[in-house]
Length: 627
Image (cartoon, rainbow, N blue to C red; front, side, top):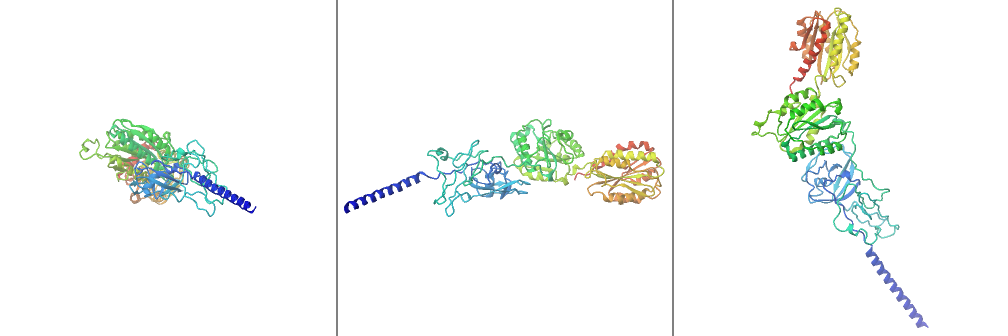
């Protein structure tokens, strides 16, 4: 009986051991079957920008060859998200030109990005951008699977998807974490046998716009958006200019250079930060004849301008630059084409070699119309070629000023990209855009009106009408021409100063309201009074014009007050009527007197002087040296 019991116990123990060994073997087999899927880091092209990938952090693989200057990079160490991801990695030294894996982290936008040359890549400067990024080579430390307290987390690279394929138009889901916190490792839920076996094997897929990059361990509440983070900007308010590019479409430029020219324009458009509150940009292409590709109001942001530039096709023909400048002056900068009036007009002329027509006369008319002309000359004439140039020194004859600020000379087309930032800096420096100032919008004009008894009430109203007719010819505002008035007899009275009225209607109404005073004629004292009470409050950047109207000889001396006025830079016009003394008019007037002193025998003939005075004011203004 005892032996039977022992035999039975031995059998039970043997069976238990067999079951135990079988269970352990089964667990090992199951463990072998439940292997972590092999993760693949997505590969992107060299031209993919960080702003196109919405994740705040991600790992990608860059191909070889991203050192190419076609892939633009903006910034140093911290890069604008408009930059090529892989180009920035090469510039920063994280990768060489053979490619590899990188970690990208998004950071806040910067107020400015400084360009530099590093590791064979020339990065560009950018005024501002809303989002930035940094790159590093530590691709295994940043992304780890979530684990329970006290457990070891395994590094997991960023995947296009986990558990399913992330492609356009498909929903991307992540596995749920294991329900037990007591397991020794956190693992992803195994997929059914055979699923994604073909996807996970072989070469990594290229990242495509629209695909979502997700980091391991992040479980979104809803599907992530793939919309671009490029902002819709209102424009850079510190660079409010109306800008026209006159681009060379002549046959001599060739298709390759024309493409380089278009890329340059696109880079400028990006750097400018185009928008309704900042710069606006249009393009005119010239060959035999000019044609507007798009005007100032066609596109209101840099992105749309760049898209429009890409669609421009070369026209061919000659290189008639002068004809193009005349076209821009007469047609482009109009209100119907989006010219804002309050913004300086800038025309940037791009020339391959030299023009096939003359530019001097057309450019002079453009300058007198308030257009700031810049010239970019690519591959100018060599010494042997200068004999073929129709108009020697054509750039200096065309630009707003000959001080070097308005001219850029490029040795060869492949260096054109280096002029993007210098050009943007210059066209945005509105304080130095000298040709924005014209004879009609850049003066402080003080009228000194004789109100003596000999004038009489009726004639005084005629004088006021003369003053109003002259004032109408000018562009009046706080920043343009300003008008002031003094009436004098023996005494003097400030009717209104330069800073009182800032619109043309207000100025004209103020002139109408001036009341006739009556009394003697002390013209010398009136000039002194005007210098003290009116012109001492003139703005430093304004031309000071004094227009004095009198009907008789002064009771006091006018020579010393006139000399003081001339010495202080006040350009004086003397208008005499009836009994005015010609010798006194010539003393009062700025030299030469023939251009600044006028006489009419009757008050009713004053209107005849208006066009002569305006013409002389503008002739004198436009004859100033351009250096």
